[in-house]
Amino acid sequence: MRVALRDIKARIDATKKTKQITKAMEMVSAAALNRAEQNTKRFTPYMDKMQEVVTSIASGSRSARHPMLASRPIKKTGYFVITADRGLAGAYNSNVLRHVYRTINERHQSPDEYALIVVGKVGLNFFKRRNMTIIDSITGLPDQPSFADIKAIASKAVGLYANETFDELYMYYNHFVSAIQSELTERKVLPLTGFEGTVSSNAAYEYEPSEEEILEVLLPQYAESLIYGALLDAKAAEHASRMTAMRNATDNADDLIGQFTLTYNRERQAAITQEITEIVGGVAALE
Image (cartoon, rainbow, N blue to C red; front, side, top):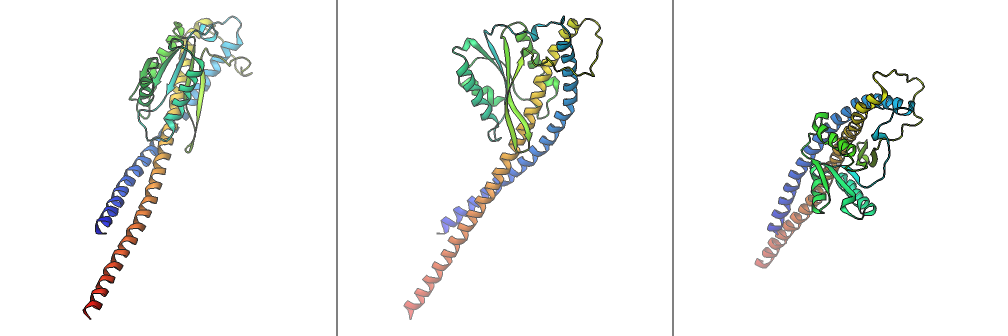
């Protein structure tokens, strides 16, 4: 019985240590989430103005044309997938990866029909294990990434579309809704669409040099900004998912500690009762 009590006590101590770790990770993720939300909010006005200018040119001019605005026959599809570098974030990674994997298997019959660009070690390892076509990847991004951190991979993704390595580009990530909710998002990045009929009546620009030359510079930047904005959004969702997962783990640890403590007290009471019974029995035998 004493051995059993020692085992239960050891499990209580181990669970308390685990609880300390999960609680600390929850607090770290909460702080990271707060900064990630601020980053996303600061980036939103830039994206709004960028979209306003691009929309004004793309839908307000009949002469302005650019390859990134034109659809072409689809021979190969690009998939830009945003995941995390580590787990312990609930279903954050698995939701995206399962959806992308299922989508590719449903849409394509051959590896030659698609190519993957992957952000995050979890996604990279997932697709590597399945021998899927990966043409670029990036891992080790900071919790609060700057545009400089992802400019190379964003520029390459846009460049691969421009040189017709693939004919369309889809992006998959978790959209941050709140601290307890995120939404799996599929977004078509290239070719750029959705500009028709969205020009504000207050938007009036004079272009110098020509509209075509402005689009030549602006559209790649706009596409790269879409990718960066999605990454900021996904980072906020990642921190929120990890915070929630660690909070649930902490709550579960509390429940286990309560159960173990109750079992320990029962076993201890049973051991005391047994010892008293043996003493009483011994005294009675002596009489």
